[in-house]
Image (cartoon, rainbow, N blue to C red; front, top):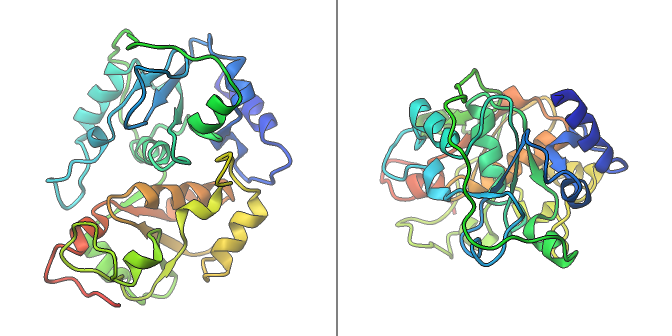
Length: 288
């Protein structure tokens, strides 16, 4: 069943050239499969769920998958994460489809952490809520209820996690590319966003997360365009890549884009502490 679903999903995004087309779900396909019991749709938006959401979707608070006061990993424990997935009715056999209203900034962070904890059967809704609403597809109101389960077990993951010490060791290291997904103003140190120190990490390159999708439809760009954005910054297929932003969301989107175009998942890591940790410490080197 899982293989059949993956093949159907792949068919929905043919022509874009993605190495892993199963990571994106087309709105038309999802609209035709809302009753599939093997699918759990997860709404990652910050607001608007009760007023309107995709039928059958459950709401997940972004704060539940990054613990701000838990360095060096900032992760929920495996037990906490398994319990969280269980409350959403997600088992190891569930096909998870995440969406938000900001081009995937929140949905891809769920994609990353699920893969980190060994659940690879997860995709992002292409275009997210923006495209779904624009197409006038079905909506539900109120708060949905799902039956909890204990059928989610942590497994060995695919994508990885980087800590502050990992990033320090990766600076100017051959074969490793540090990728900054933040805005030019943040990278240049002009925009602090409540962080004590501004700037960027030495040897990092800027690959802005919003450049991977159409600003109006929020549909992802073809693989060739995504690959060009990375290759122009010297990010090649053979490298280990560590991405960062402020709190690991935009960084997750950069990782997702690399996964779409076929980058080795074992060579992808998210610096989950990101600039919230790096910029608020006094012992981290910063460039401006």
